[in-house]
Each structure stands twice: as C-alpha cells, then as structure tokens.
Image 1: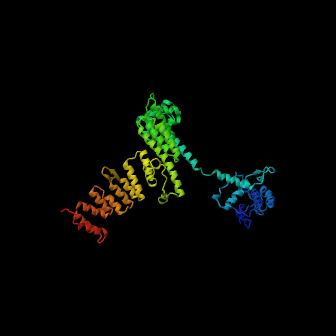
Image 2: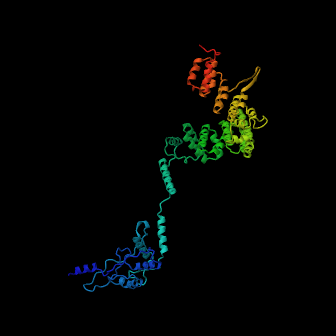
Image 3: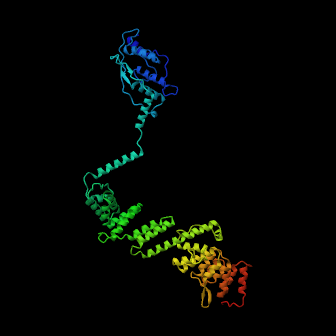
Length: 547
C-alpha cells in the first residue's frame, strides 16, 4: 500500500465507535448545574457548530463527556500535534480553531428543539471567551465567568421584542407622513398666488394654506373663494382663518361677508356644532342691529327659532316652562315681525301650566282607585307636552261635566285657547262616543230656536254618524243621525255601507221610490225583520209612489 493511500485511510478513519446523542438543555430533565457543565464543555471544542455528533481531539481520541477528562485533555490536544504510530511525519492540520463573533440567537419559531439547544450551547460557550494569559502562543480559550441561563433567555426575549411589527397607529402615522411629503413635493417650495391656490382647491389638486401668514393674504384668499361661489373653497378658507386668527378679528371680518356667514352657519349646523352655531347667530344678530356695521345681517328670526328649539328640548315640565318664558322675553318680544309667534308661545306656556296639575291629580286618583271611570277606562299616557286637541279630548273623557272655573274643564280649555266650535264638537263627540254616552252627543247637537229645539250640528250629521258607527253605536241611534243627513244620495250611501236597513227603507219611502225599494227588498234575507218592514211599506196604501 502506498504512502498516499495510508494517509488517506488515516484521515478517513475514526476510533470512536459509540456515538453519543446531544443533550437538549431546554429539556425538563436537564438541571441548571448540568447546563452550566455543558456550557463549560463547549470551550474545549474547536468548532461550536460542527455537524458531527462527537468532538474529536487532535490525537484522534474521543473527548470525554465529563468536565474533569475534558479539562485534562485540553492542554495536550490543543498545544501539541500527535504523531502517527507508523509512516512518515504527518502534515500539520489544516484547521485551527478561530474565534467567531457571537451570533444572535435564532427565534423560537425558526427552528426545532435540537437546533435551538445547539445554538444556545454555542452562544453560552462564546459569550465570555478570552485568550488564555498563561499560554500566549497557544490557541486555547477559557471562560472568564460561568454563564447564567436567565441572562441568555432574557437576551433572546429582548431580541424577539425588538423585531415585533409596528402597531396600526404607528403605521397610520408613517402613511400620513408619506402623504404629507408627497403633497409638499407636488406643491413645491415656491409660494403660490392666491388665484393658483383657489384653482387647486376647486380642481381637487394638492394645496397648502400654511404659506399664507399675513392677515391680508388670508382675507384675499377668502374673497377669492367667495368670488368663485364654491362652497368647499369658502369653508376651507374660513376654517383656516378660524384656526389662525383671533376670535374677535375672525368674527369682525367674517360678518362683513354675508355669503361667508351663510356658508359657515350651514357648515356648523351640518356638523352639529351647536355651541359655535348659536354663538355665530348671536354675533350676526348683533351685527345686523348695529347701523355702523358694513354688512347688515338680519338673523334675529333664525336665532329666536334656534333658542326656542333648545328651550322645548327639555323633559322636565317646570324647566321647560321657565325656558320658554325666557326665550319669549329675550328673543320673540324684542324682535319686530314675531308678534304672532309671541301669542303662540303664550298659549303653549298656558297649556303646560294647565297640563301639569291635571296630570298629577289624575295620577293620584288612578293609584287610589276611588274614581270608577279610571278603572273602566285606564289612562294610556300622560298629557304633559301633548297638543291642545289631545288635552281637550282627555278632559272630555275624564272631566266632561266639570265647571269652567277648573283647569280640567273642556269649556275652559276651549275658551283659553280660542278653539273653534267645529274643533270642540268633533273632539267632544269622539270622546263621548268612546264612553258610549249617546245622550251627551244628542245634547251637543240639539239647539234652541224661536220655534223650540231642533237638531243641528256644525260638523254635519254624516260626520257624527261615521264617528258613532266606529264606536259600535246601536242601530236605532245610528238610524237617528242618518235620517238627519240632508243629501239623499249621501244618506243612502252611508246607510247601505253601515248596514242600517231602517234608514234605507225610510229614505226610499220619503222619496216615494217604489222601484228602488223593490230592488232593495230582493237583496234582503227573506223572512227577516227588515224584509217584513220593507214589504209592509210596499203594501201601505197611504204612500203615493212615483209612476
């Protein structure tokens, strides 16, 4: 066998027979002392990331796993090169241990348990390596201090935290910064003219108003926006002036431009900024009343209505009464042209002052159960904040017979709020028909004249018949009012629709229409009461029928 072949067999052979598996220091069975011993063991290896399962010394002998054998073998295996038992002298080994910088530990999600343990053990062996002072020419290294597992784990956690993704808020900030840079680059550093900026605003191109610093430039920007009649441009200029000017100066210059005031008030109302909206209305109203003001703005009516809406938007009745009174005195009575509205507010205040005591008293009576009417017809809701017609209907149901000197009297409500006779009769008939008080309805329709009493109704007996029909009035009561309808065709139509046969038969008899009565008899049920009545009328010899 040649020399080259012997050399190749030597370097390709190995004396290690039984390979030992690597130990995972993260396993539950591995203690802290054993992990420290493994870290010390790594300093004796030439390459910390060798793929072999065992460490081989320069003497081709396996390194012992115990700390004592590795430390005793360290001085001989690294300082001297072993000689082969036969053959010529061997060349020096081509690999020498080199100091490598500590590598950043891999995240837990990038490797499995075995690779993670290898990397961590390698990191433990390299974190505190120093050149041995006892042998300056040797290639050996030693640990200055024993590594701690908590230190290594903390380092790995900090490295993982540093690579966390940005939050959504930070991403939004970066996105807005990029957009701002793009807008600034698109606009350019040169200061644009007011006309060019307004053109950019109208056409939707990027623009910046921060370049206009002086008051004259801001006013020129607003005037130019008003000349273009573009609402978005006007609002943008106004908002910019509001942000960069003092309030007194802003209000003074804005009130001199009525078009800008209109746009700004619409903008505030659309964005529900009611405090600023009311303040602007007051400023406009004050400017309109000032004769020395250049722009006369008549906003008194709009301000009064806005204050009225704020006053009635209260649930407490007493607080609402006080607010409506204050609004009446401060805005409606002091404003010319709102005299009619002043009367309406007075009636509303009077109605609120009437509703509260009536509702409180009826609520107590209903709880006590002493009033029979409240047990027969329970109250459905409170009458506070209800309209005057609803209040009248309520009082006609529960307080119809009370005197006019009481707050709950229907006659008092009619007189106080100047209700017409039709309004009163219509409401009273509906209220009394609900209680089936047909006598009260007849009394309302009976009037006295020179020739005695007669039936008369301002709303028409057809309306009365429709109301009592919905209340399921008896047929004789319904027929009584149907006979009083003046229009014959309408009377027949209502009687047929309400199935009031007596009224139909009496109408044909009064009109002497024999053919019409005969056709109606054919539609009736034979041998019924109305059938016998109709046949009796046809056989009556005293009736002179039309030929």
